[in-house]
Length: 82
Image (tube, rainbow, N blue to C red; front, side, top):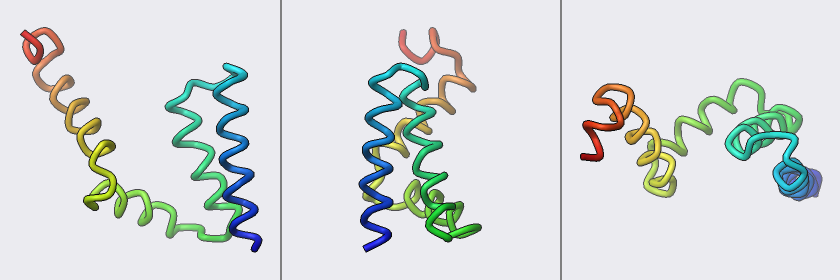
């Protein structure tokens, strides 16, 4: 019950942070779930959750986004999208 309540508070906090434009959306989508995970008592397992999500098939958009950032960093934006 407490974990479900914490999840709902995280979603409401995400929406409030993004809609109020106090925090950049990418920062809110990363920082608030990490804070919620630490508040739930998962501690150092939070890092394992993040790595597991990136490596799993269920999180392919995040994986593709990271691949795109790496490609842009190594090749440069103009060479990548010519």
